[in-house]
Image: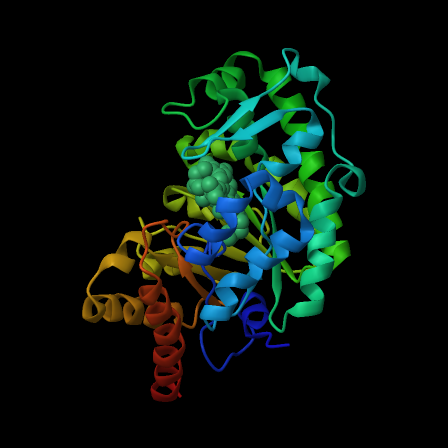
Length: 343
Ligand code: CP3
């Protein structure tokens, strides 16, 4: 297996900078759209042969260094007792039970057997590492309480401020689900996991520290040392030091912070993942080349353990496929050259 990605996560020397792309399996690929014309999104997620096929699609086109399980962060919520629907051209809609205290913790082998089956199929096919993932408890809680995405997340924040006990109880239950879900994926053989905290960046740094971080530490502590853990907080640039405190091996950063600045603040002891703005894939090639080179150069600073190239958030459905190939090939080529001039 080509384990360049895992080496970068662990901070070992690599011949080039590895790259994978958040949401690499998905809507910008015509072959994904073709499958989606035949099956709805949940059917793709719940049918192991189809989910495995979607994971493999981008790997046939691009020389990427890691595969990601095809599923969604909301999938395990079904097993907790929440109805979920993905609208054809919009976000998800969630219908939680009236009494949130009735939510259950999942048993992965019973509630999401198809995820574990997908992993088994993929392990037989791949010659690069497979990344498993989960949503982070706070991000999952926002979807449960807001019923989908939200502008101010007032329901979630009010629960946090006004009904602290229920907030803590719910976050505890979701965290237990996340722990079991990640453990089951690791037991099934994934080589690394990413925890997506898409909405924790809407919090004040103090609320993040008091109301999110303890749960993340607990989750990461429960799997620490088994496989590399990547923790990605969208909009987390203002409290990077606290994010580092999570215990993750790799800190995912978005594009709102300069990666050199992020590296200086993270200091030693962790690797970093990121951080091209997904919109920059619409730049003309020459400017895109310069942006890639700048990120790679900063990612080689000696204070950081390792650098995994990625976008700062998921790839946009409108992205031209040839630009993705340009990105992947140039990350490899430029990083090889930079290493030879550094040596
Ligand atoms: O990264 C991958 O390629 C693996 C699969 C994956 C999906 N979603 C597939 C998907 C992963 C890792 C996710 C994570 C996810 N899902 C997050 C965290 C990352 C982020 O982008 O912030 C969040 C917040 C969700 C929730 C979600 N799922 C939303 C808001 C939507 C609708 C809008 C959108 O971004 O697509 C989804 C649907 C979804 N998840 C699709 C895919 C390929 C599109 C479904 C379709 O085909 O219509």
